[in-house]
Each structure stands twice: as C-alpha cells, then as structure tokens.
Length: 134
Image (tube, rainbow, N blue to C red):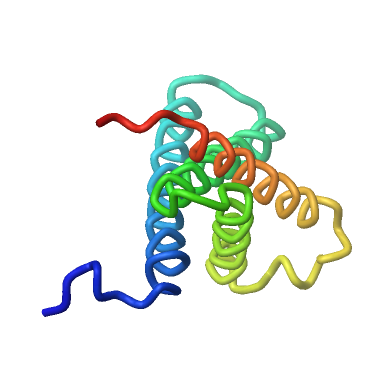
C-alpha cells in the first residue's frame, strides 16, 4: 500500500479536499435539516417559513463544506470553497431529479446557486485563515 507521500499532486490538492468538503457539507446540511424538522415539529410555523429554513440549511452545509475543504487543502481557500459549493449544488440538482432545471428561469434556483457558492467561498476563506493547533 502506498503512503500519502507517494500520492499524485492533483489527488492531494484537489480530490481529497473536495471529497472531505462535500462529505462534511452534506453532513452539516442533514444535521441542520434535522434540527429544523424538530423545530417545525414543536413550533407552529407557517408554510411560508419552510423555504427560508431550507435555505439556511443549504448555507450551513455550504459554509462547513468550504471550510473543511480549505482546511484539508491548506491553500486556495476561496477556490476550494467555490469547487465545494458547485459540487454540493450539483448533488442538490441530482437529488431533486434535475427538477430545478425545468424552472431554471425561476429566481429561487439562481438564488440557491449564488448563496451556496458565496457561503462555501466564505467558508473556504475562513478555513484558510483559522489557526492550526500544533
């Protein structure tokens, strides 16, 4: 078995950080959605409040994903964040059966893309600037 030092450069710089970021983003998004489902279960919120809560979960997952990807890569924080946000948006499209493509002209699809890319880029910048524990 090869050690991590023998791995190709592109694997070390892009694939592993992107995988860690996407996995962490999915986990953070699922945990946020579970917390918000508990909130909806205990509180009497109107139906119009569900969409903003889902958007908050997307922002949380994208931010955490960008942060983890940048911390894993150790460089190019905003770029790793954008790549992670794009991958998470692609997974969102796949999970929805590409139903968002039908109404791509609707504002909410573009808002989701912009918010996810922005939050993950900010997460990547924050991830690079955090001090590492030694």
